[in-house]
Length: 126
Image 1 (cartoon, rainbow, N blue to C red):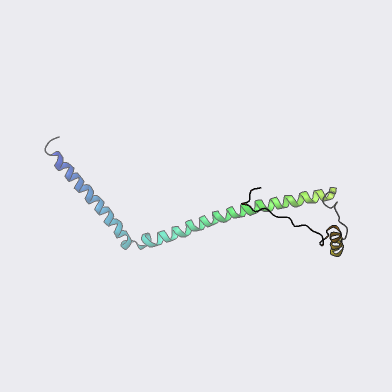
Image 2: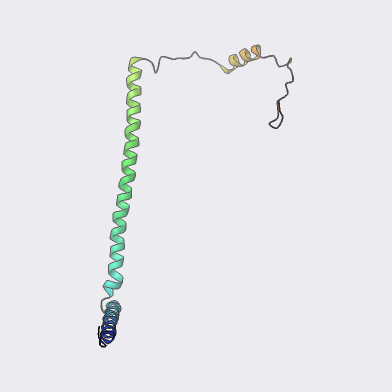
């Protein structure tokens, strides 16, 4: 390390800074020289990548809906298979009217004789 070493480092730093300055100013000139690179290329790339991304998302939602449809189809098929064997349609209730149900309920419950029962509050101790 001689006395020339700090001067060489300063000279090297100055040339490096000048190169960086020139490259950045050259970068800035690209916008004026080639407007397609500054405006057109980002616009086109945004459009293309956006379309690809949307296509990917839509494909995912189509796959999910297909899986749901397949599950529903399997349920329908198993129900048809069971109905051929009998258990699905085996229960056939009689034709019951609402009037008959009301009369049966009124016979079971007497609304004229009842007791008061106190409902305990949550903060009361039993």
